[in-house]
Amino acid sequence: MKKLMHKINLHLRGEIQTYHEFKIDLCKETPFQQTTLLTTRKIPIGKTLSYQALAEKINSPKSCRAVGAALSQNPLPLIIPCHRIVSKKGIGGFTAELGIELKKYLLRLENHDI
Image 1 (cartoon, rainbow, N blue to C red):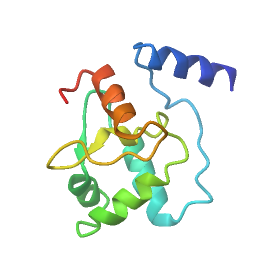
Image 2 (cartoon, rainbow, N blue to C red):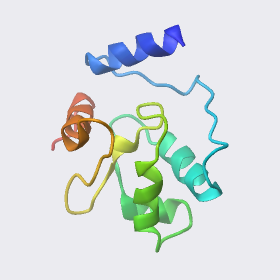
Image 3 (cartoon, rainbow, N blue to C red):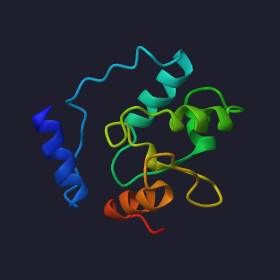
């Protein structure tokens, strides 16, 4: 836990980190949520996907809203980088504390134009 907290602190200061070495437990999530979150976890730093593209990637192309709902329940932001999922028309939603401003901040840290 100490290593994770250290990495998160570095990340939020602008030293972008990866979190793949940390095991995650999604047993409380539905199978759809698990698939959505695990696929989101694989999105590399510097890349984004639209909700539609993520729905297609998990073989559920008509489930954009369900993808958004699954992401809104993300129990591990940063470790599962749901901030990298954006709307086709803009930034999209973000339910973490500080909302859209935090999403914009995280994307700017990763050199995205917002």
